[in-house]
Image 1: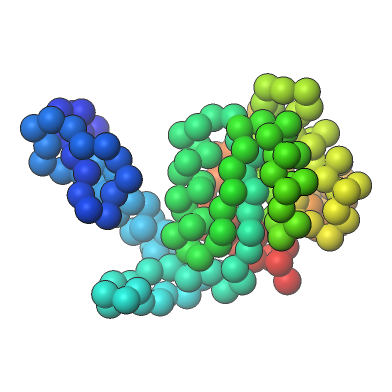
Image 2: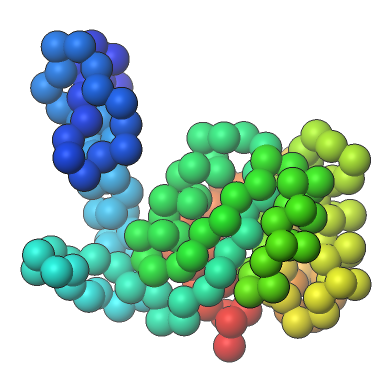
Length: 177
């Protein structure tokens, strides 16, 4: 862990500046995350950005709505999906997700946690979304509940927590085909 006093932002980072800074904590995290994805993925291919740096590229770009009440998990998944080329939207609970879905007709994948605050949990959200949009891919995740993948409706997957990012990316790609 890098002490907060030694963490700073650079020009490419969204993290606010800290006093007496030397290293960008977000960039350290992203370097580790990027290496982790490169070491494990088989679904994505390697591309290059405008500066010639390698980057992950999703085979099928998707618009993914992430519904997760834990901000650190939500932000992490959002960053990972954007890094590989997906468009990532976020909601902290099912109620927010319904607002996003009503305003966006281009959502391809719903990625939802089961346990969260609000008027409905992730399973109820998935059922409501399936009724509204039968063609949307749904990924349900939980560290508390284990769902039988065979009992899930078509175009729905269960991803138990903790999951590897490459498993999430693979699941998104499989639901897009």
